[in-house]
Amino acid sequence: MYYIGVDIGGTGVQAGIVDEYGKVVLKKECRTNVEAGFESIMDDIENLVNSLLLDKNISTKDIKSIGFGVPSFINNEGLISCVNLGWNEVNFIKSIKGRFEDIEVFAENDAKAATLAEAKFGSMKNKKIGVMYTLGTGVGGGIVINENIFIGANNMGGAIGHTIIGENYYDCNCGNNGCLETFCSATAIIKHATKLIQEGRKSLILENANNDINNINAKIVFEAFKENDEVAIETINRFKLYLAKSIASIINTLDPDVISIGGGVSRSSDIILDGLDELVKQHLLYKNENFADIVCASLGADAGIIGAAFLN
Amino acid sequence: MYYIGVDIGGTGVQAGIVDEYGKVVLKKECRTNVEAGFESIMDDIENLVNSLLLDKNISTKDIKSIGFGVPSFINNEGLISCVNLGWNEVNFIKSIKGRFEDIEVFAENDAKAATLAEAKFGSMKNKKIGVMYTLGTGVGGGIVINENIFIGANNMGGAIGHTIIGENYYDCNCGNNGCLETFCSATAIIKHATKLIQEGRKSLILENANNDINNINAKIVFEAFKENDEVAIETINRFKLYLAKSIASIINTLDPDVISIGGGVSRSSDIILDGLDELVKQHLLYKNENFADIVCASLGADAGIIGAAFLN
Image 1 (cartoon, one colour):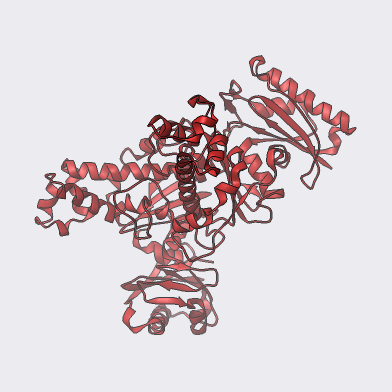
Image 2: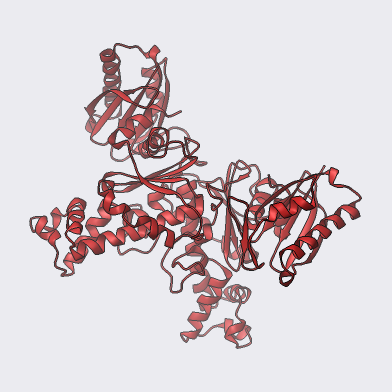
């Protein structure tokens, strides 16, 4: 028996046939044709899934369920609004069910789906309570209890990127000040390094960005950190301090077994994890007790497909 | 069938026989003789419970279980350390079991026990996910999922008073800066009003404290708020702003059905709840969705006994 997982992004759709052990056995992708509108995207997804079945030489009868990770919030009525996809309260599930009548269909926020994959098959496997930090352009997250995604009463749970953790010099896209996302994302790293350089601080970062401040990205800052660049060190240490404050607050609240760090920024996990345990411990209430293992996500980009496949 | 709940505090022990509907049918108390040491306190508790049974004319056979709320952290081995009681890793459960051999015995942190009572019989009844804020000298808390206390992997969960929510001008007792407790406790109110007055601000608060700055308490500040005193308004509004930031962060993370506010400070719930919903909404990620009801705790001081009685 197989599962199908579909990870819908703003630029591309990734679909895969996944076996019961969480292994992606066949994978295909197509462009997300945002301009063409909702039904056209759904047509493309239908074709993509049928093409997977054809290539694997199986039918919908061999598929236990099909799940979708979508880059947006899904409300209690199953309606999806997503600015990046140009969707406004579309009835996604209904449209899918009309296309794959014999299969059970599930949909969830993509970060939550990736969290589920890490819980079932990756860095948070066999743990009772796990919290995922997805550190990328923004900060996503998810909570897993007994291998189920914890969605809360209105499906709003797990948005740890928008927990307020300090006071910051710029506001978050969500309109608030002090969100974790404004301290611990790639965007936060770029903004802070840029700010210091604009204040007149000398830094390798600017050189490595071809002397164009608009070229600065998180990778350049992490590389400068390795070369002991002061602006990079100050920027990354600030990032780590607030990450530690957030993790300690999550431990004080939820006391998980494991905290998993994924997303693009986690490619520099050697730098992020170095000394992080000690920094977290300093911010805990119960400093002498065992606390969550802090680890890196292990499934990489496939987590979205795998997690979507195992939604239920 | 009855339950017995015992709420152990730093100055007194409250014990009660509770019926299956969460009603306290008989209640007794004794002084907590901290100086006399652990075993002596346990002797007093044994006598208090036996005296309850005698007065109600029932035996241990009529009791389903006996539960204890203790003002401290209980680690995974069941050991309790509590500075206020002078206990250092005492084996509380073992001592109780030696005294009441026929009854099931449970113990939990007192704030968590009170949270359980509110979930089973009070302000959070019939809700799937509830979060309790106990706003007193400090800030306690608890999380309830399906009428069970959520304790986490190492029993450290629910300590929302020590989530970091901003940057403050004084550090928390736990050694960190920015804990909710330093913004939203009676202590925080007293410290902030005192600070403003020491900075030269004129205020009714000082008059009402008999012109002795050391006499200021939270009640005086709330009373001055009602008389439009500017220092009181600034202090209480700051308290409410950070309470809203914390509640919004909890909703973004856990998305509970209900948030219940108890503790001594909640006696001024008319002032605290006024406009709080709107302030929370401003700080949410999903501003257009339904979110948790924010209510006052309803069981008052009996919550400790009732919650202890229903531990399991």
